[in-house]
Amino acid sequence: MNSNVVKLASELIAMPSETPTSNRAISDFLQGLLEGAGFSVEELTYIDPFNVEKVSLVAKKGAGAGGLGLFSHSDTVPGDAGWSPFTPVLENGRLVGRGAADMKGPLAASIAAACPFDATELKRPLVIAITADEERGHTGAHDIVKRSQTLTTAWPQYCIVCEPSELQPVYAHKGGASITVTARGAAAHTSTDKGVSANFKIAPFLAEMAEMAQTFRAEPRFQNPLFDPPTNGFNLVISDGDTATNVTAARTVARLGIRAMPDACFEEAVRMVVDRAKAYGLEVEQRSIGPFFTDADGPLARAACRATGAPRAVTVPYGTEAECYQDYMDALVLGPGNIDQAHTVGEWIAVEQLTRAVEVYTRLIEEMCF
Ligand SMILES: [Zn+2]
Image 1 (cartoon, rainbow, N blue to C red):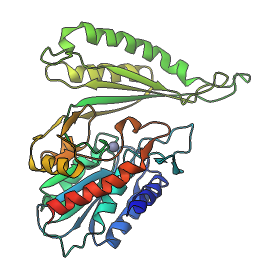
Image 2 (tube, protein in one colour):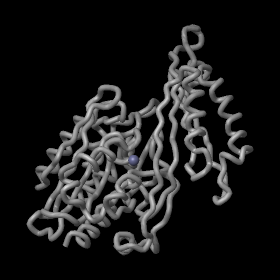
Image 3 (tube, helix red, strand yellow):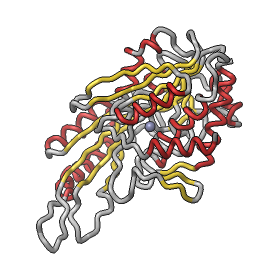
Image 4 (cartoon, rainbow, N blue to C red):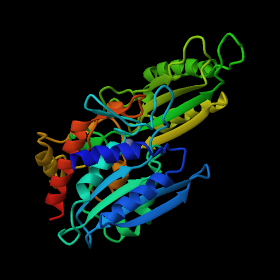
């Protein structure tokens, strides 16, 4: 089973499913795999705003309502330059590739754990859900909770969002907005003078963001004194793919984060950033995530602590689809791998995390479905 999870995670990494592209191919593969393991699979498709077909899957084994669902997404952020994102490599106890941690590795672990169970043995049903467009506003998750017959006619009682948490049970996270601003240039050796630097294109916008950061720190209306710190955590990170100094940058991506607090002009702050990016003719993608909160001492959190050996459930600063699922099921975030690896060049997950995750999910299925 343990070699299975690494093999399956590698197969999934080798099937590109970057959010802007269709996830049809990987979804067909997953559907075949799940049906072969005795799941009934519901496919939900939609056309995204860029006219690209997206697919979410809801697979169920066993009858009736209740039981446990393991929830993942099949899309990843773009592969990016500077490495071979879709050629999985196993080295030094790590599996390297786009999605290794976020979240083809965790998805593979949930499937490796769920497949061996026989439908006739289950006292309560077992669900595997795999959504599209997690990286773009949790669109697939918000779609399946409204349209999936499998879910809406018989909700699982418990929902585990398998996002990487280093197998720490997570009972709460803050909300926030993530804004991705992309400038496009043309790469050329500077000796030719034929290049267009994406860095120079984005520079004026970045200068404005530095001023905006001062504004958010200075003006009380962007703050809430009930929080420590009271500020919105406005942050900016930049990547041009480590372009050499004698080459013009083809693509520069700035990612900005703003934390959501009540009564702190959160929407206005997001709009200010988006408006300035658009004013410079830059590409903008924005997603906002609501907060997630459940009982740290509820039955699912307690079961997860028993299964992982964690002393207690924790909170994390990053958002997940649990913000959507919590309205319908008792949710918890629990998955292998470290969130710091998500979206990085050279993304990896420790094999030990993957194999432990299979054991943890297996234990939780045994506890919640029998
Ligand atoms: Zn993810």
